[in-house]
Amino acid sequence: MPEPRVAELARNTAETRIAVSIRLDGTGEAQVATGVGFFDHMLTHIAKHGLFDLTVEAAGDLHIDAHHTVEDAGITLGKAFREALADMRGVRRFGHAVVPMDEALAEAAIDISGRPFLVFQADLAGKRVGAFDAELAEEFFRAFAMNARITLHLELRRGANVHHCIEALFKAFARALDDASRRDGRSDAVPSTKGMLDV
Image (cartoon, rainbow, N blue to C red; front, top):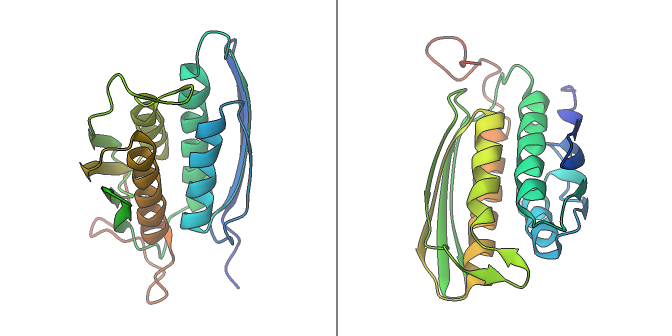
C-alpha cells in the first residue's frame, strides 16, 4: 500500500495566521474558514473537484482588505501541496481541464515541473463578487503556483457573470491539479528524462 500523501503546514506573519492540511488521495472533504465567504466557497471547490481532503483556517487583517489572507493562503497551500507530493515518483505530472459554468468557460493546464510559472488570462480587473475583489483570484493562483513549484496556465475563454467566471477557473484548476498529481499506476519513476524534477 503506498504511503499516504499528506501535509500540514502553518504560516504566521504580522498580517495573517494560516494553517492548512491536505491529503492528495482524498474524497473531496473540506473544512475551510478564512473569514472571506466567497474565497471559502472557491477553496471548497478545489477540494471537491480535485478529490483532495483539505482544511484551511485563516485569520487575517480583513479590516484592510482580503489581499493578505488570500495570498498567504495560496502560499501556504502551495507549500503543503509540494510537501505532500514528496519525491513525486509515479505522478502523471501533466494535467489539463476545460470546465463550463453556465455561460463561462475556463481552461487550466498544469505541469508539476519544479519550475514555477503562471500564465493567467482573465479580464477580472475592477470586478467584485460581493466583498471579494475578483483580481484576488490571480493573486491566489500566483501564490500557489510559485510555492507549489508548478507551471500553471489559466485562461477564461468566455464569460459574463463574474461569479461564474471565477468559479469556472477554480474548478478547472482543481480538475487539472488532480489529473497532474494522480499516481499513474504504470510506473513509480520520476516523470522526467532527467531522472529528477527541479526543486
